[in-house]
Image 1 (cartoon, rainbow over the protein chains, first blue to last red):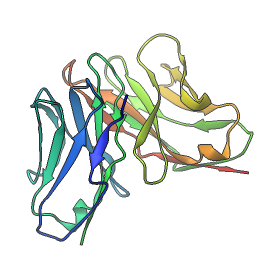
Image 2 (spheres, rainbow over the protein chains, first blue to last red):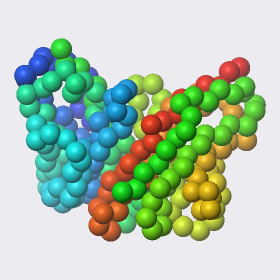
Image 3 (cartoon, one colour):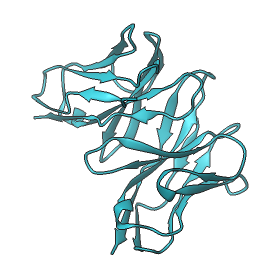
Length: 112
Length: 116
């Protein structure tokens, strides 16, 4: 079974731009979560989607948004990028009734 | 809210020696606890989980973890460490604001270095 895939793997943007990251969960998994990983703040929860609905949201500004499609693929968008948005963005999926999340390799975003 | 703490930023051990990575938790209700490992420039890999049952949980790559309710701890262990175990280890707890929601809260991480 293929794992969680994320595209692109690396991204360089400048301040003020916007960016869209994509995540394809493990086949059959309907829950998709996003996390931000930085050296200073560690791993922080962004949001979780299930059946195209956001079920949970972390403490991030409204510039961070996401959505999920009917095939469970998810995208997250960051608008008006700031230097502090530079991070590794991780996507994870969970199967129905399961407890563990499986993570993708991440997208490394650098904001200049 | 549920939370976990990893009291050690770094753990250094010699190859062949036992490895322990510490984690303590603070939860209301029954804890759902996890260990993940991250290698450089990679995502997180699931190692093991404790939901209920035996206090000693066995996982991938020879790792195990001991759940201790009285000490609110969930330490990761490996009897004989390998150089290839050098990585960043995260303890996590599942937040359960609503039963079907899914959100993990992570510790700060512990860097493990195994020297040859």
